[in-house]
Image 1 (tube, rainbow, N blue to C red):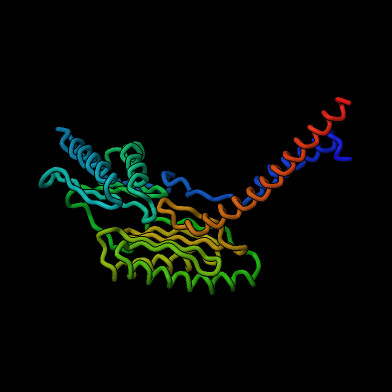
Image 2 (image 1 turned 135 degrees about the vertical axis):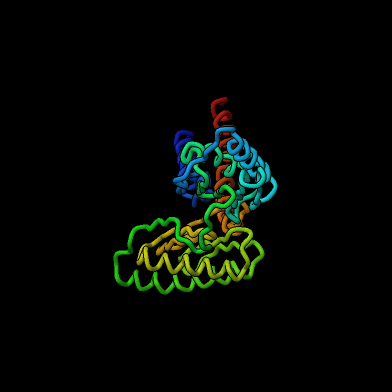
Length: 301
């Protein structure tokens, strides 16, 4: 007695197909969003009066310096030229990016600045993962909390969801405000009961001023975006974002591996499942080998 070979082959095929289906249904480990996407640009109306080309050369030198520095640190300032011809600038990368990712992000901004702002005496190019800005000497300064740009997501539909969102969001905002003040990087990312929140200040801002800036940004989000399930608010010296996930926050991986624990759990589940299924397949293959040998013996009689 034994399994007919056709039946066994079908069983083995079904087992292999089952492995494929199960592997396909494992949770996907999310990767960081493309940090080089353009968010917005800000260009001064005034243009360089540059008959000798000195401004253009100073700007070129400044941008090259900033791009070079971004391979070593995630925030830096620089200046080029002297006196009335001087141009100052800086870049800031998101706090969860590596220096390699920071460089990849910042290196895209000079070309975008030239394309979008031309010979503007001041400009800011904001990408998802970094921003770069420059200005000529004597350019008018604005307050740290000057509003620049916002993005509001879709509104929550049910009134119960709106109430829940507002309560959880308020706690998450307070956590972020405290987080940027308590850390040395002026950066915070975390979550509170389905609300993912991020806040960051420009690298030369003091911790107290950073907390005030982030608080202002969150207040702007509440006032301007209302019951939106997500929002991004950019002020002159800081920016914030939040997202509400009613069904739980998905796995979000960043350049520094902030979701390592979640990822490890996912991988552990996957490896455990594959190991179990692999053991079954090995047993079936051994059984097939035994059946083949028995079949050959019968054929030899």
